[in-house]
Every structure is written in structure tokens, then in C-alpha cells.
Length: 364
Image 1 (cartoon, rainbow, N blue to C red):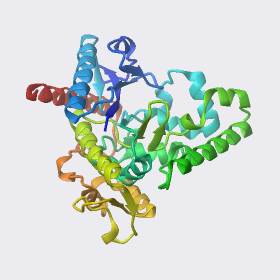
Image 2: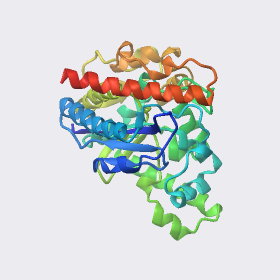
Image 3: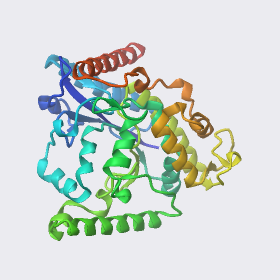
């Protein structure tokens, strides 16, 4: 199953201040600007094996890190910039993002401070792939890299809270986790319904219909944790934070194994009882819990991370090994962060990113 990655990183200068990537965007065609100025995205091509994916991701990030150091800049693998307010993170294309803010509302600004990782899987048995990715949603806790927002410790997993519960709270069809489906047709009907609702919301806020339809289509008017991408075509999981390359690759490997099993053997949705939860040791179809269970474990993971009641057990039953992960958020225990401390922690995260890359280079 071809798999590709997209990782978003903040860009800072040698003092730890957020800055524009500028010429870092010219390092490779696989480096893209993001919708806010001090962030970039590094992409891989679809890879047929994890070995190929590891080599490509590490190589591409290393090139950008080296170019950044030549320009007195660093890449920061954190889900939020820790203490920065949304207003201090400028949009790159103000006209386009102003339209989204106008439709969604002022809470859309919280998306400005969110950096994540996207994993793409080649479409095969799409319904089973979608449902498996829905069930593994709480796995974002394995790589959570920031618990802070505006200098305050918000929740263990700050980014999914800000993105889902704040930014898209008023438009849940656009940004929150959606339930299982029985067919691709059902998923596409859900997209059409969400698109119609989003358009109505836009019209109510004075957006011209033609302007809306020029900007959005049903497939690109949703930013849910699980997406079906028609253009690529892939099934995309968007839940994880920005994180260290080694952790991203470990997660991609684990998730790929689960999705492969679902693709090859199918999925069945069991009850909410513990005995019906996923069990990686069982042959045959991947048994998934009821969606209510997925939602409840996801909420616990957002608030308490891997230490939340039942989160580790849930992930182990899916096939993850939580003890193999070391989330960066766990290393930042401050209840409050001033500007000076936040800058220091950004640079420390940049150091860890570079050390992580160097370890992988040595192993290679």
C-alpha cells in the first residue's frame, strides 16, 4: 500500500522568534508554504515500503534543516508555538483565509497556531480504510508535542482541542471526527450534505455564492481528521501533531499495518463492551468499537494524553505499543510559559529534531 507523509514545522530564527521560511521554500518542490507565514510543509512522494518512506522523509527534512541553518533559521517540531496568540501568527494569503474566517467565525483563528502531520494511504478497500482510521483516532496521543496555548497549559493534547473543539466547534461537519460509513457512496453523500450546510452558512454571512463555489468544492470544504482525497487519490489521516521524524515514522508504520489489515481482511463494528474492542492479536477482520467508544476515548486522550483512563489499553488492542513512544509534550511541564521560556523551548525542540535526524543518518 503506497504511503506518503506531509509534516508541518514552525520556522524560527536563532533567538527562537517565529519567522517566515522565505527561500527555504525553494529548497525542493516537495517543500510548500502553509497558510500562515512562519510554517512550512515537507512532503514525500507515495512510497511502496516503510524503508523507502523513511529514507525519503529523513532526506528531505535534513536538506531543509541544513538550508535553514545556513540562513540562521531552525525548524521546530511542535504542535503549537507555545505562547503565541493567533493574532501574532500572520496569514500568508489573507484574502483566502479571510473568507474561511468569515464563514466559520472568529474561532477559525485558532487554526493559525496548529501544526500537524498528515499520513496518506493509497485507496484500495476504501470503506474499511476510512473506518480503521476513524477507530485509531486517539493514537494522536502517542506523538502529542504541545500542551500549551497562549503561554498556558491548556490540555495534554492542545492541537486537537484547538482545531476540533474550538476552531470548528460551530461547523462540526467541517472539522470534527465523523462516524463510520457502510460505503463510499455514504461518505460522498455526507460530503455533499456538509458542503450544502457550509454554503448556506456562507450565504447567511454575506458571501457571494459564485465566490464560495469558486473557492470550495465538496472534497475541499472539509478538514476532518479523516479525509477522502479524490485528486491524489488517497485516504488521509490528519490527527497527529507535528513531531520528531522518528516518532512520525514509527506512527506511520504502526498505522500502515493496521490499515493494511483492514484493507486485506475487512472491518466489523462490535459493541461498546471491552470484549468487543479492537484486538490486534486476533486473526480475520479488524474488530472496531462502536463510534461512541471511539469518541469517548478520543476525548480522554485530548484531555489527558496517554495517561487518560483506558487510552493505553485501547491503543494496545489496536496494535500500538504506547511504551515505544516519547511525546515531546511530556517534557514540557510548565503550567505557564513566558516569552523567554517559550523561545528557549522552541530552540530545544529544534535541537531534538536535528539530533533525531543525525541518529537516523548514522544508522543509515
